[in-house]
Image (cartoon, rainbow, N blue to C red):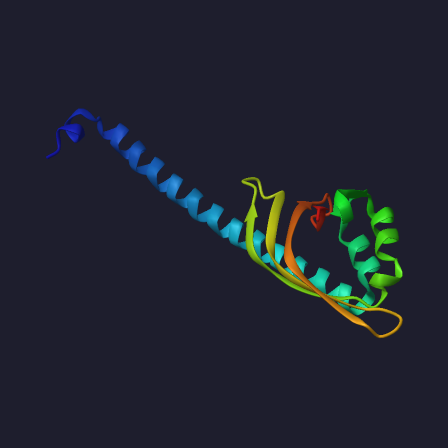
Length: 156
């Protein structure tokens, strides 16, 4: 028998076994929670994309924006707040826009209240003359769980 086990009292040994069991159970519960939150984030990204393509960029970017949301756009301009974000996306360039994206990566905070995603996007705009412009790039979004348990972006 291993000398370590000789030095442990019976109670201490059982406490150690119990502690290992609790830690393993906690780890499994954390992994399940993480998986559930990641699925939520992927779902909200898909809803965001769907609403943008169905109702327009101005609607979707405002709907999914947290009250303290910030987007970085042209020439490193920061646009703050859902109303200003909606105004930005109300420009004629965005009126007939469609966008397609899916996160390549999702990660969440330990407490499950913050998440971030990144991946590739395709943005297609059609102007008043019918000219189509396509832009491809990489997006990065930071999501924050709201008091009502919904997810809204705070950075895009």
